[in-house]
Length: 392
Image (tube, rainbow, N blue to C red):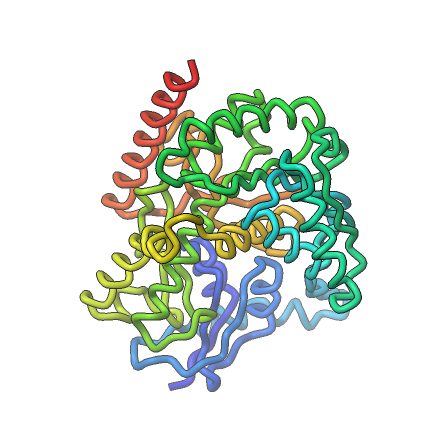
C-alpha cells in the first residue's frame, strides 16, 4: 500500500525524538516533507518496511500548503547541506595515549580543524604521535597541521579542548585520575577559559562534573562523551540482534556510567519502535549486550582501555559543536532542572553549538525510564561526594 508522507508526519516524528524517516520506495514524500527533513537535520531512508500499519499523512493535510507554494511570490527555502558546519581553528588534546592519538588522527583526516595540538607531560610522546600523523598528510590531503608538545601553555587559543586520559576507569586509577582532572581543569581555566571542554574518559559523568567544578568552568562549555558512546553501543547491539543495518537504527542510552538507561520508547528499527520490530527476547539480549560492552572489550585486553570507540564518540561531539552533525545528540552535560534533575552531570539529548550546550531536549520518557534516569543522576551525585572526600 502506498502512503503519503507529509510535513505533519515529519514534524511529529521530530518531536518524538526520531531523527530518521524510513519510507517504502513506493511511498510518496511531499516536497514540503523533504523541506522539513532538511531544515530539522533529519534523514530520509528509502527501504522496504516490514508489514505493519503504514505511516502516512492525510492526503488533504499533506497538500494543505501546496496552493500558496504555487503562488508566484513564494520563494522556497534553500536546502542546506552542512552549510552551518564550521572548521575549528584549533583543537587541543590533553593526553596522547590511545584515545588522544586516535582522535588526533581522525580530526586531521576529516579536516574538522585547521590545527590539532597534542599535549602530554611524558617527554616526546605527543611529538612522536604528531610526527606519525603528519607523515600521512600527503595521503589524507586535508591540510590540517598536527603538532605535539609537553607545554601546557599550548592550550591557549583553542576552540575545543579534549581531555583524553590514557587509563581512566581502570581499577585502582580513580585517585590518580582525580589529580589529572584537577590539574587539567586548572590549566584550562588559566590558558583556555573560553574553550568548549570535552571529557572523553570514564566514568564520564562524574569526572565531567569534577572537571567543571575544579576549574570553575561555565557549565554549558563542559561536555562528556558517556551517553554518546553508550548510545552507539546500543545501536551496535540492536544491529547484531536484528536484520537491520546500523544506519536504519535509532537508539538512545541516557543516564550515567554503569547505569545507562536504554530509552526504548524513542528507539526504532527501520522506523518502527524497537518493541514492535523485535521480539522481547531479542530486545532483552540487545540491552544486556550493550550494558556489558564496556566490561567485555576491557576483558579482551585488561591492561589497556578501549581507544577507538571513545575517540569517535569525542569526534561525534566535536562535529555537533561545529555544526557538521545536525540535530540533538546524546551527550553528558550538567542538568539544571531538566527531567527534575538538579546539579548533576547526566547523559541526555541536547543541541550543541560552538559555544557548547545550547539546550537540553527533554523527551517524553516512560515512567520507568524517567525513574531510572533520575536514579542514575543520584548515583552521580553520590560518586561526586566520594570524589570530594577523596581529594581532601
